Image (cartoon, rainbow over all chains, first blue to last red):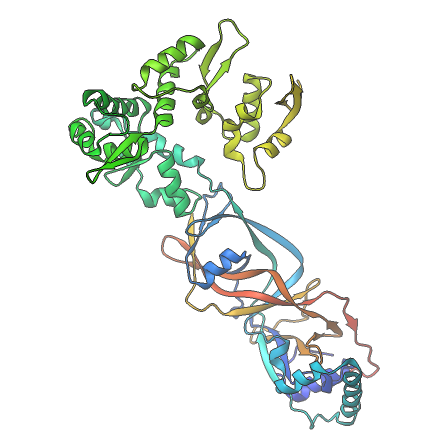
Length: 429
Length: 109
């Protein structure tokens, strides 16, 4: 039987094939769809299949733009305006024949009402009917009784692979690396900055595997400041300089801590700090406080100020006497602010087993990105950690599906020490 | 590398015919399309039946667990764009063994 000859089938051809296949035409709906491979020039090799979740389907159906992102050395991600998806290619041993405008069962019957009736029939009468039609079909093999409509449908391409997408965390660690070379260190040092490395928003967006909303949140979080159209991080010492100017105004003006004036702060420092930086720093370090006589007053975020000043003290390498450090820290913060050891988590480690007790700087941002490397360093630094101690250093890997505890179960060994659950390296050396 | 997918308003819905293994055609015409097979549906239950060469395949219409987008790579000037050509929400799945057509009289069509 040569099925390949001729590009257009007639109803007669279709009937003959039905008969050869020992099917009964009267049991079939009236439309025969002839599936064809289009002529090679019409095959579309630029098509891909991609699985969607309900969110992506909704985005597509409302006509929103989705963006694939990734450098050649990165796994590609798909971004909506506010979510990021991991994209992976999956294989199937089945052939997926993609057919535009293919009619599904319900739309191939000419008489919808007839169909509905027969669907409603109970099985007995349906069987009767089917027997009846069977007889009829044998009688009417010449095919004159029922109409047969031929529709040719082209298989636009055959697929054995498709893309799977899975919501993932945006990949933002690269952002710091992108911005590090152009840190702002003060106007007097601007001459030393390689201007060719400055990045505007679009350049950053293109290179970061994150959606716009996620990128915007992260830029604010890492305190990137838009200066003359380019996003810049502040160099640590410069940030300290600006924050000190700002905090000094509290004493200068004898402001209560919840009566910080934005206007006076900006006005007093306008000759010392570029306005975009000053405004951003004020936003990073303060929150709204009272309104009096329709003037909005602000207060400094105590925890943020105290943590930053602790980092300033811990900046020089080496260990410090804990008691001396705590005293120096208390002295460094504006009067009325309270330092608290809990603010040191993720910034410093304290060893209370030594005499005297010591503290040293140990910042999350200085640890390696790779999770295995990071755990290695963590357990080299300290053999046993409580969940609270280690959390700030591994939180960045936590996802909805795998929280910090699950991470620890996977990468560390749990044990109990003096009734406290502690984690140590999985493999003893 | 960055590329975009866009939709132009109403996205058409296409369908997939899923078969086990692959279809080999004896000869593929370069001039025109090559017929693969005849697809019918039973009136009674709308189950699909595909006559493919010497085989009859009985299948089922299945709603995809996850819908699919059909995206097409379009080369724009500096960026690679993908256009969403269609979405696929249903497929016709033929997963049972094809039944050979046993015929004493091989008919030429």
